[in-house]
Length: 220
Image (tube, rainbow, N blue to C red; front, side, top):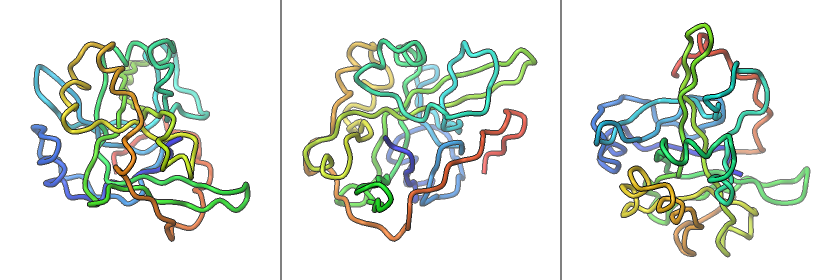
């Protein structure tokens, strides 16, 4: 599971790394949690664009947005078959800029948070899927989920899942390739790609309140 990540780099650094068109002035955040707006990079008319969507996937065929546990992760092993995600996997893949993520490890009640980042503390891309939902009353909402996979040997020491990381040379293939080719990029990052260390964040965050209705949301 990936339920908390960071994007503390500046908008200028993020734009330079991901090469999208917009000049978004979004605030750096050390803790990005489900239910919040997250930045995604996606294709539109042949170019990369930055957009803010809500973390917590809502399939387009859902009739109404109900309070409950959001779909914050999609298992990479089954994403091509799951009704909730298979259309997005074919048509609406995205990159989610990050510079670290958090995982809790240890016995129940005494879990320790670990911060996972690149050895150079640089940016990387989490594999995501996004979707556009429209309500019967005309309200609209764009949402996203992060993909996970079984971890590499190093990260398996703290958790049995890790987010899918897309390497820079595969950004274009993930965003524009056929679904069957993109599915080949759903794999654990190689050993040595990340460092992990206990962090002073404290404890795992408490359960989030039910998500707001689309007309109640603010971006930050």
